[in-house]
Image 1 (tube, helix red, strand yellow):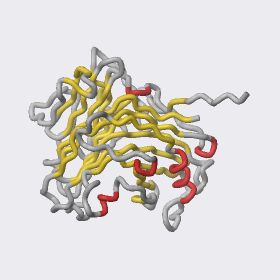
Image 2 (tube, rainbow, N blue to C red):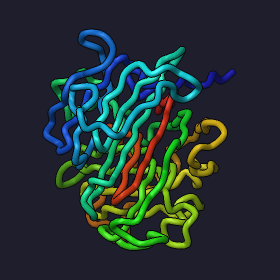
Image 3 (cartoon, rainbow, N blue to C red):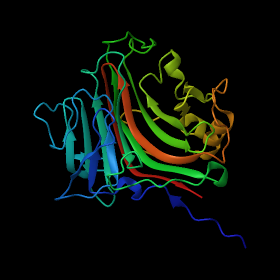
Length: 315
C-alpha cells in the first residue's frame, strides 16, 4: 500500500510563532534591527520589511508621531502582545493558542509614484548575521506539491484621491491604490551566465478589484502577467486562479486559504517572460528560496492585513 509523503515546511517556525520580530530598514542593506518583542532578547526567525516607508518602524515600540495603531484585540479576540507603530505603519502581534499578526499602512505621507511595502518574511540568506528562518526547497521539478495555508482577513482597504483620480485607472505616479500579496521567491543559482531570481506574486486583494479599469480584473481568472522581464524577473498571479475570491474588507469571518502553488509556479518557470530575455526556463534549476506576505500601496491608501496559521510546505 502506497504511503502519502509527509509535508515539509519551508519555515523554521510555521505560523510565525516566534515571540519577536526583526525589522528591516526602509532601504535594503543586508542588516536587521532587533529582534524586538516579548521579554528580554526575544527569539525570531522572521522580519518585517518596510520598503520605502517614509516614517520607518524602529526598535522603540511606538514612535512619538505614531498614527497607525493596533487595537487591543485582533483576529478572533486574541489579546495584543506588543506592537511597533509609526506615522505610516504598524506591526502588531496578538497572542492566544496560536499567534496572529497585523501589518497596517497609511500612505498619506508616501510621495506619488513611490511603492511602499510592508511584508512579513522568514529570515533568509540575505541576512547572514540573523537567525535563519527559511530553508531552500528541492528543485521545482522534484516536488509534487507546494502547499500554501493561512487564515487571513482584510480589516482596511481604502484609497482617497491625492496622486490619481477616481476610478484610479492611472499609471504609476498618478494613482492611489493598495493591495495584499503573497510572494514566493525562486532562485536558479546555476543558470547560464550567473544566478537568476524570480519574484512570483499571488494577489490576495486590490482596492480597485471592483473598479472598471485594469485593476478591476485583479480578482478574476487571468493569464500570468510579467512585471519584470529581466533578471531579477517578476510574475504576477491572482488568488482567483486557485479557485478562491480576493479578500474583502471587514468580511464577516476570516478567510481560510489553502492551495497548491506549484502548477502555476512551475508553468511560469517553464514558459518564462515574453521574448525570453535570457530567462533559464528549466524547472530542475529553480528552487524556492524566500517567501513574503503583506501589503503595499501607492498614494493615499490605508491597508490592514491580519494573518494567522501561515505556512508554505512541500512534498
